[in-house]
Length: 226
Image (tube, rainbow, N blue to C red):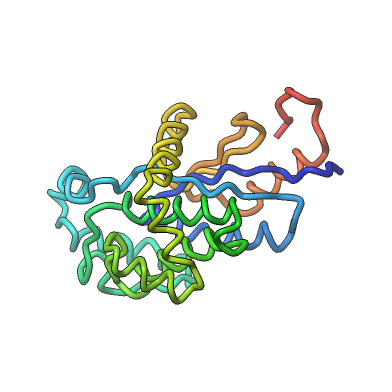
């Protein structure tokens, strides 16, 4: 067994329903493998401009109302997932980017000791629940700070990193890396220095098989057999 954890780059958009569903698999991986794995929570822009996306993808299929019906149908196969029937109707976030920016600011603080351990993932989960379960506009700063306060996130730390530009730089780095690594969408699990990418509604056993193969310590620089 290796002493260093298997690092998993995890690219998502906070407004992506499939990433919300995939959190169940992330939780299961962390429960099963503990400190043998480490997730790097990163972001890709899928809902960067929701008005434009809705017009392009759903303009002829009912707009927000059509997308709402699509999500409701999609989650029926996942009874453990709660979805507000008014999602995308009661609140229509302008962009996922503002939530991503907030989360990158939390992540920088966590890395440097200004936020508690696990605060990035905790806040990410809480924001998704605020949108998908409570139908709140998580692109709004006031909603973000309310969710942060409820999850013991130091808002002053976040504001500092937003104001000084460091959170913007971190977010742009995520977006640039997503392009460079040809991340197709959300969610995408990236393992083995980018050699293995698992994209979309991927089952837990497939993710686990990739992790187990890496734990067998393939030779340095060599792709695993998975």
